[in-house]
Length: 68
Image 1: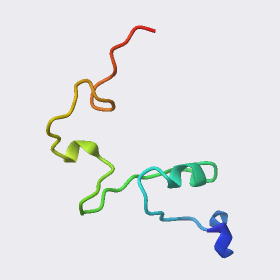
Image 2: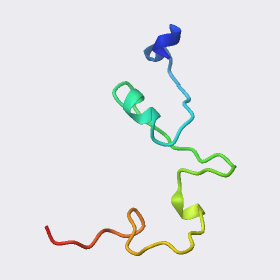
Image 3: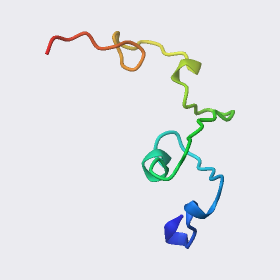
Image 4: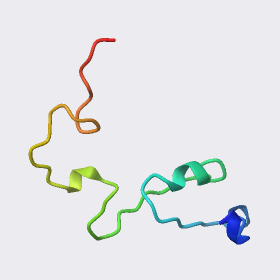
């Protein structure tokens, strides 16, 4: 936004499309970040997908089991 001459600090609400990439840019200036899942083939909620032939454990579904 800055490169386009738009200062996000001047707005009460900023909407950014993306799952994780907007976080580093807006976290320092945002009072709150709300994650919204829009319909389509992608989702921020991995539990909405059916996974076949995946290894277990697989983070973030299961915590890794290891001894440091």
